[in-house]
Length: 360
Image: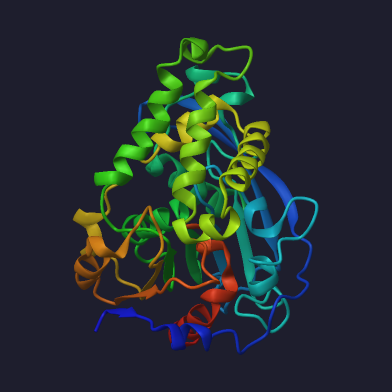
């Protein structure tokens, strides 16, 4: 059986290993990719910001064997995993500490800010809507060049990612099938963006593009359409049960959402968000699933509004991946919808087992 739907009793049995712990301080740096050629044909020198933990180890042939690539979600960055100022214990604190599944004393962990995100090159740096309209293939190419040209990494022990990073993981397995030992996509589906997933992304895009204040990307203050776009992201990223617990009355709901929207608006640029959401427009790993050679473990969540299990897509498509299997973790008071991908305590034992199964 390739797809395992866990029961609540199994879920609550997780977490028997080490809990959240301190982890080494990440090292931050920038890579300059000269003459980066986008799929559109445009060429630009681009910056890729990244964080690393640990150090590379090479085998007798000089090939790196302990590198792990971790890829973030739409609108996120490497700080989403390790924290920005204060450490992020719900992800890095569950995975990168001593004795944990991705112990930074054993592994060389590489977390880039994807193109258009974080401190990497993006529209708000100055080009605004003149910035090349990047897609997932461009983002993966930038990640590959960071690894091979700047960090001199010629092999990965694991590629893993959350949401958009999960979608990138499916594509990594097709584009560079011999570059890694294993793949672990979280909160993603191996099919093109369609149905409701396509609709909400279109709503975000149109809210910005059709706002006269957007001014073809040359606004001086953030357009009002950005507020609707941010609300849509907050809606899709959580779950009805979580929202009801957080805001059980009308007054509580209004106050909570206003705080969240205000905080998100302070951190969001309209062009950056527009480009990030639209970068998924040509995502379609379906035709190449048979090209994936290495073991792949997909982990999804039953209360994920973006990738709901009732669609049956994961169950259907995972059968085409030779060494693929999938787990759907049921909803509980511990899960938070789509964003459960960053609550590593909920799924890290599956990662730990997978690392043992695929180890050399």
